[in-house]
Length: 183
Image 1 (spheres, rainbow, N blue to C red):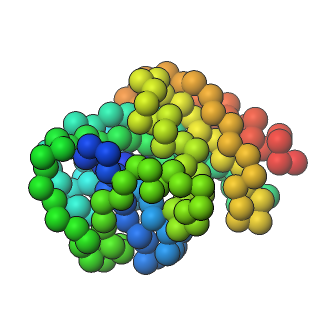
Image 2: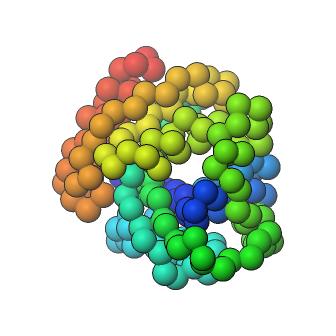
């Protein structure tokens, strides 16, 4: 089972991001998220993480798939990916300093700018699909020496979020296949 989740809170043409003060991705702008607690569903964990990290309690939450990864210096891992929408009129004044880092609204164009080196490397390639495609995907990131080398996007069923058996079956087959690619 995947241990993490991530969410991009969208307000109009802005996304609420966190500039992390801790590993992983320290010093980079990233989505909101964290670890799943024991016996917690991915959705329950995401709702809890949004509230804990931002205080936001009311949003429209959409499961968008998975972000998974492999690399020569670490094992297969991943997270459940979500988009949360709040109305454009939603008042949430930033920047806000938190235990995790600094929360701030960033324009989508700024996030996607090719010259932006302050954003987590896979976001400019995964976020447009999460925002504009109704389907769910596994965005599989392949890293070498800490650098994103390849991104493989595969369509997956939305059942993976709520159906534990389907999720475990998918992840186990993916884990086995990724092990073959690394060895």
